[in-house]
Image (tube, rainbow, N blue to C red; front, side):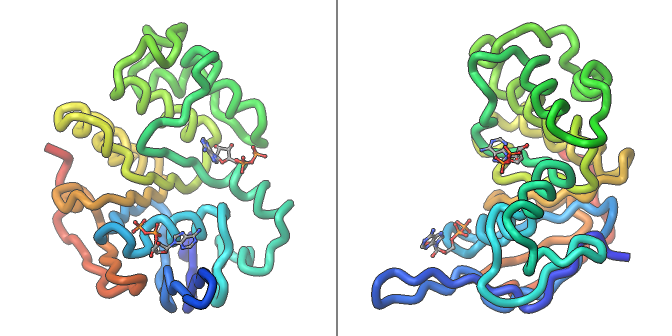
Amino acid sequence: DPLITAKNLSKYYQMGEVRVEALKAATFQLYQGELVVILGPSGSGKSTLLNIIGGMDQASEGELFYQDVPLHTADSKKLTLFRRNDVGFVFQFYNLMPNLTAHENVSLAAQIVTKPLPVDETLGKVGLLDRQNHFPAQLSGGQQQRVALARALVKNPKMLLCDEPTGALDSQTSIQVLGLLKEFSRTYDKTVAIITHNTAISAIADRIFHLKDGRLADVEVNNNPVPPE
Ligand code: ADP
Ligand code: ADP
C-alpha cells in the first residue's frame, strides 16, 4: 500500500486580480522505502508540492491521504500532529537552534514526538557522536546538515522531506549527505523525497518527478539507482 496517495492536487494563490496556479492537478503515490527526487526549475511548484505532502500547507483542490488518513480534510490540530510525529523535514539552511548543542537540537525534536529513537543512537547513525556537544556555529555546513538529518530521523517518521538539502554544500559534503539519505531509505525503509534543481542528484532516485509550470509532467522510473558519487 502507498504511504502517500495524492489525487488531483491543485494549489492556487490569488494575487489581486491574478490567480497563480502553483500546482495543477497532481496525481501520484509515494511508497514505503522509496527515494523520490522532485526536479524542476525555480517556480515550477516543487516547494508547494512538498509543503502540502508534509502538512505545512493544504491544497486548494484535490485529495491527499497518509496511509488511509485524509489530510485534505484534516483540521490544523491534526495537521500539526501529523507534521510533528510522522514527517522529518530537512532544509537547505539546516534551521538548527543556534543556542543549543547538536545533542540538544536532536533531543528537542525527540521530546515532542510520540515514538522517538534514542538520541545517542541517532547521532551515531549520522556519524556525529564526537561532535554532539558542539554548537551549530562550531560545526561545518555538512556537519550541521547531519545534525538536521539526525533531528529528522530521531522522530522515527516513515517519511523524510528534504528541500534542497545539499544546496549550501560543496560536492564532497553533498555526497555524504545524499549517501545518508539513500541509507535511510534502503536500510531503515524510510520514504525520502528530495527537492532539487540539480539534475545529477536524480541518479540516486528510485523515481524522478518532473515538475513544469505547476504540472507533474513526467514520472520517470530509475531501474538502476546508484549510490551518490
Ligand atoms: P519552486 O519550489 O519550484 O521554486 P514554488 O512552489 O515555490 O516553486 O512556487 C510555485 C509558484 O507559486 C511560483 O509561481 C510562486 O511564485 C508561486 N507562489 C509560491 N508561494 C506563493 C505565495 N505564498 N503566494 C503567492 N504565490 C506563491
Ligand atoms: P510544532 O512546533 O507545534 O510541533 P511546527 O509546524 O512548528 O509544529 O513543526 C512541526 C515539525 O515540523 C517540527 O517538529 C519540525 O521537525 C518540523 N519543522 C517545521 N518547520 C520547521 C523549521 N522551519 N525548521 C525546522 N523544523 C521545522
